[in-house]
Image (tube, rainbow, N blue to C red; front, side):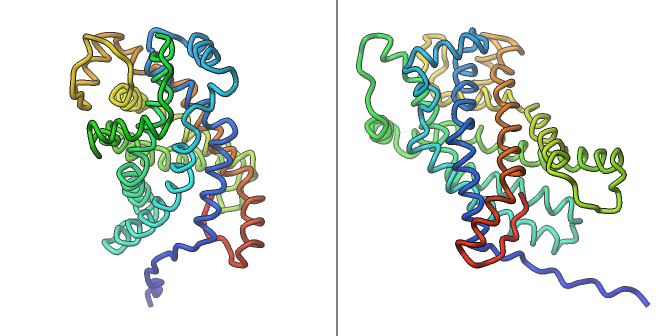
Length: 308
């Protein structure tokens, strides 16, 4: 007699899960996340500089505060909403993928990729665009002109170019999110399998915090292979002035422009802080996940079911 297969159930999206995701994302971006993001973006926008040159440029823009440009409100809006968008959409996509016969692994990757796509178009497009504008508009200040404030910049772009202007580079963000989520999920799973073999935990025993961090950090670090699309995204959103730069830049023309100016090396500018960012996000989600989970459960009175 064949075993009765458990009916497919859609995972509920709980308030406690959303609160946990938003809280961890907010902590990650407000601590080391935004400084690493600023270094990565500065290196991608000014490809003639190395890491030391980028840090020196950022420091000259206001000391320690230079590393937090674009944090308020854009990085906070992105951090507090992207988890919610991902959880809602990934849950639906995973359910439908499994209903068409996908395995847990394929369902998980499908959910992550579709969720990443939704993140890009719902909130990350305009948030990454405005963060990049904030980080790259310092050239105006270097000319002795007082740069406009955050909302002033936002409204000026909106009046001149409309929704398309504030979502510049959103297609590149979408490609990055989809490839990032797919490869991060798959590579983390491969790393976890190898760690289980090495430690003799192939029977599904619980991994230690260090083992979890190692698996996720390897997945996050190795998924930086798609750095060229991140450099293309920064170039499309950048306020850098260059007469050779194509007007109305698309993903293809931005890629060709960067390659013609800086070659393959230019397309991987900023990959080191990006790997650092992936590792820091992992440390926050895994190492602080259990502490944050307990705090959220006490606050909301409901069990958190999200994995971290």
